[in-house]
Amino acid sequence: MRDLVRRIHEDETGLSTAELLGNAALAIAALVVIWAVLQQLGVDILGWIRTQVIS
Image 1 (cartoon, rainbow, N blue to C red):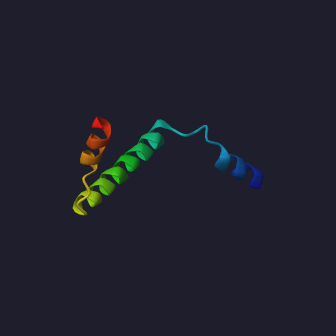
Image 2 (image 1 turned 120 degrees about the vertical axis):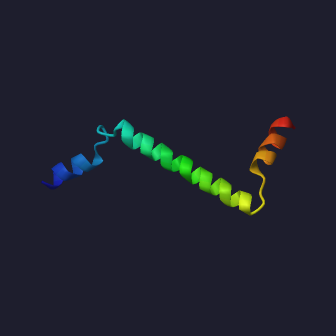
């Protein structure tokens, strides 16, 4: 029984599109939150990126 549970737990063939989309949504939400916090602290990320691309 332990082998079956371990095999099921380690098998990723059932990773569905919904799970992948959920993970992507969480990652985007985390980036938005980080960006908002940095904006509140006065860090201009877009300005920095713009400067790095232009120079």
